Length: 191
Image (cartoon, rainbow, N blue to C red; front, side, top):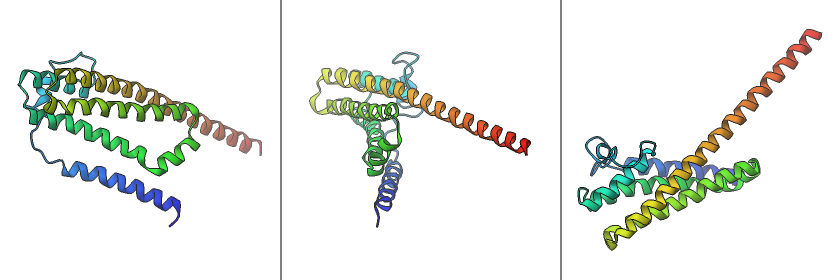
């Protein structure tokens, strides 16, 4: 089996693992959908906060007041942590680590590296938040929340830069196709 086949298997295994995690995610305590945390989350955070930021702020505020049980809190924060784990699994695939740096510009590599670093920072903040039921240190809630929210906002900013880069590349490709079509039409007209 050559290296490309191994990389394909690694990617396939990561995708299957992510799907399996979704399928295994049986509804237990519904802390996100209607009637759960989502309904209360609108009261927390700023109007322009990302949805997960609002949910995280609501979870921290509600667990402090006792309106959210420790079980609900751990399950909700744990789901966000699982999402971050699945995102990091993509960076662990050898094909991603090996192939992307050779195919991306320095700017694009900075975007990919920045995303990975911020996901790790978010996981660190979520880890602190998940330690709260054991430590019951309110300071952990504040530090973990600040770290996770900061990382999520930075991920959003980096994702916007990645989207702009993707749009720029697509525009360049469209312009190149149009130039080639124009040259082909000119060449045909000259015949």
